[in-house]
Image 1 (cartoon, rainbow, N blue to C red):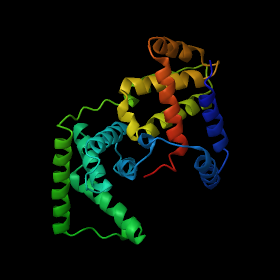
Image 2 (tube, one colour):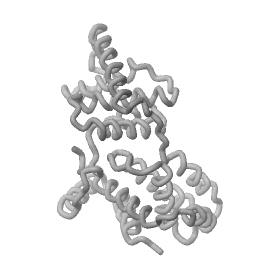
Image 3 (cartoon, one colour):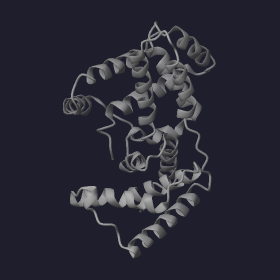
Image 4 (cartoon, rainbow, N blue to C red):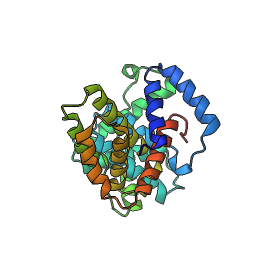
Length: 270
């Protein structure tokens, strides 16, 4: 049975694809500001948005960014009154996630990307015109980042395990991409929309209320309902997975939250 909220979301995404960015923003601002009430755990914090922004500049693969977001939300939950700036915590969790994933990015490079970002925003300069910090300042920033890392380690009691839903969902989407009897544009549209829904949800704190498996199954449930009748082989695989879920209502609730976060992601930044 088609979920009306999911189908409404797909129709809105399809409509927005034919609009330019400024018109989309105006439409979302007008519609969302007047009709949407959003829970605080579904709001997107500025610190969380810094993680993918810097992570993409550093060419971090998605597991690093997703795990850094999980660490960020877990830290903010246990230390809501911490006095450190969001960019400091974002730098701390991103550097920890890079280390956890054994990715070869030096602390200096992480520090400089955050430094350049805020110098650009402060002085409205092009990246090429921003001077590098002095040796002493860079040394101090490096020391401060190490201190922040240890602060986060202690706050989380050194529990840094982060299973992310993307790693569960991707094999199914790869299987969909390998399906020969489905239009490629339909496949690309479904894969991109599903991954966008999942990735955006990691920007809000509510993502840590669920296991990676629950988030993954919610996305697969979304894909199952949205894939249409022509994707027979893919739907057969998803049907077996979803049939094993005991609480289908919970999956619907998660999908509803994901759609809400995706709808208001440009508005609910605190």
